Image (spheres, rainbow, N blue to C red):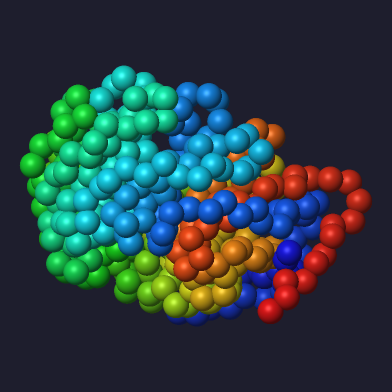
Length: 381
């Protein structure tokens, strides 16, 4: 169920941003009550892809408690089967699904926080995976992203180690193997990373949520990056997502703030710089954020998983880089990660959260746009 709050408009003054009530006017019906899909012990993060080739999205869920990644086959109705588990390195805390060996089967890369490595599990196309092969990635890597960083058309990996302020680049060979990691120092507290073209030179760059700033490392096109350019951001920046939030064709950023009651939007200028961050209220602990068009108006929206209140908050986009608070929706437990995709084949974006304390994935199916009044239901505290 959900609790509808007043929407907010942005009024800016020098050095200060305020949110004032405004009307959304959307006909979107929101999300249905969450479905529960049991996981293995202690799930932490997930990725989604069609691992078994049946045309239905599946989940890969890493569990640091058991040093495994669990494959949960999708049923096409928003539910998922119990996981089939594969061993990773020690304490996996992040996972990426992509194609590492050019065979059209989905592969996995899991970041092992205690093991100091990235585990590569090559997919067989039927939902099964080869045993993990580990690659060194510092001492305590925490997050991962993939991109074509150099000019060889092989997917490469980026892993971030917050404890030692280091970013690791693992260049792919195109056959599922990777070269020894290159390292870049980041003097702040780097957590999660996204890749994109932030300065319009055609070379992939990195944007890292670094607690008190966002660090931009500009790509040189050969697998190396510049030192960090630190951009003012909201305090506590922990997670990060990127998309085109307005119509200027420059990539923008959204950050989730650890322990805070807001998310922040940084609009890109196209030259590697960003406008001052604007904060939007959500529930406490916006631990994970994602960008997606939920109300089918061709405008990106933002959703935050609130790690302190066991719910998710939705901000609907106006198309100009501003947002209005729509509602929040309960999930089964305190979410450690969030992802969005069409899990039931109705061409609407759904949401899944990884609920670490209760060994569960909560799936929120999109109700879509319907005629008539919205069903305003209060989320019981």
